[in-house]
Length: 355
Figure (cartoon, rainbow, N blue to C red):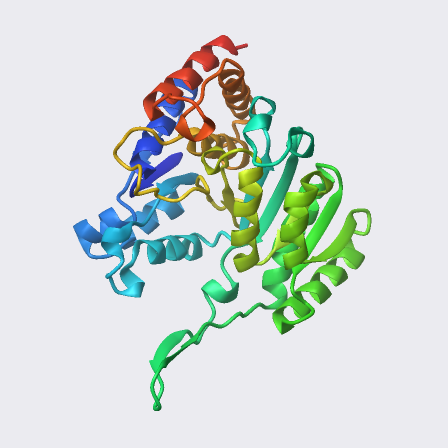
């Protein structure tokens, strides 16, 4: 069994994933690594963004880590063959339903945030996003021509009790190990799926998690509060669409999308899927200037959640903090380091922080 399957993908994905490989080989040389094409590059080579063989390799590994997918060169490809369809199919095929997206402001980067230092210094909250349901997977979905001219597009938001309950359970369990507070974000005032979401979360809380503080919040208010007073949050659970949006807003609080990792988890014992939350950034792809820290910190999450390497995860996180304290900055953080040079800085810090 492969310990970690790398899926570099497109754009800056291969650049940042290469730094993950360097860190993994230095920090955990006993872990086995493998690699597959994924996304647009897989479509170019095989005619599909995710081959059955690549999906099988991901499902049979202990963890999979991807870089990023997509780019303008695939914008004319049929929807079901686009790189993003490969990502959705990967998540569904691996049955990962809970997306953990931390919003963590490292102290050396507090001044890089778009908010004042006092609002973000010490920030540490987790967004738990439902990942395999909702409007991204609901049907019917189509665009049709109307008889009188013009067109109509339809997307469908669908959630079941079981889908909501299992992701809410992840959020409550996480909160018990943190500050014991969960915000559940939806639009129950205007959406039936949001109303069901609120009812299911409320019932689960009453039955199994009454010791955890629960607050319901409308998703639009959550967006406002994230940029107004983000440190009020500990764990926030929400659906696929709102989680996608709110986690990107939270990411900017930390100074850069290039800093934030994510984990996608399924049932106990199943492999997790890890990825930086940034995109493929085609505007800077190939220039060697992308920040690899989100990808490296995604590996830190894989070590912690899937690979049973908690000590190594702690060591890597300490090394990233040490590198930042020593002034390591890529362009997105106001510095001049290249992707490889930031990888060098983390490797140097690993040696400096070794126990």
